[in-house]
Length: 268
Image (cartoon, rainbow, N blue to C red):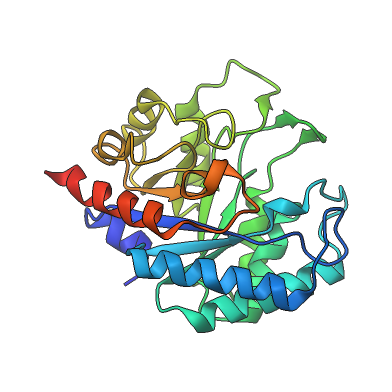
């Protein structure tokens, strides 16, 4: 049963982040592929050991991203790393290919047995550090169909972090409705930045207008997981599992264990 189906049945799903070290050919790369693979596999195993239901392989440390999308070298590296992670754990594996979110769908198809992809610009026109970002939800859904990856679920961000609206009068309920009509399988809501708590009001507003799972995408930690899990259907956990919140640091097992322990208490 997919994690989307499990959330629909009322389970609270915890998804941990596997942040890859900077990939070959990117601005911050200082190490070889084997070291990058070893770190990703180690973090994946740590998440599984701690009791997480799923993980996302994400190349967030590749910033700044090319406006034209991921390079062939990056796509090849992400495919290899994700394949090694997939082989190392039994929990669900997802992909967030920063800088080229459509490529994540193709990588998922190449790797096989990838449960979902995160599409941060599914709806809404947003403005961020790299300029204006137009929605790519239709392209994502059509590409999924074209490559025969319909079994890969789309987790769609609405009014996503790190960006601001080009039109600030659009309520989040409208963005949620657009995502549902655009064939998203789950919706992700976030705070304004990595590590910034997602407001409970935002989660509640979205939950009231959609019939698909709503996942918290930023700022969840042992301090607020009980409150957030009383409203949302699941959460993506990243920086709070790392020393000093540094996304290049390995996941700390004790932090991951403590998060899952608190998450289980949310239903009490």
